[in-house]
Image (cartoon, rainbow, N blue to C red; front, side):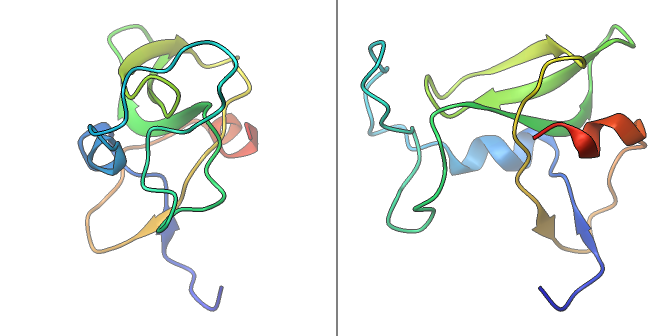
Length: 100
């Protein structure tokens, strides 16, 4: 992508991509809660954020199925969406970058 400053967004950043106009999803309809015109390849799955959770084995994630944020075990195989900006990211365990 030509840049070396990619990072995982914080929860308050990633949640801004949720499209509140899409109703809460019913099982198996596979429509992500995001504007697919701008983000056509987003799946209706969980995505990790860089925000820490109270428990060390848990991290914040965003569901683009339901449009909600929650804490999940870091052993879960979730997707990541990378962003670029001057905002510093939290210190993350290296394993988070492998979970996609």
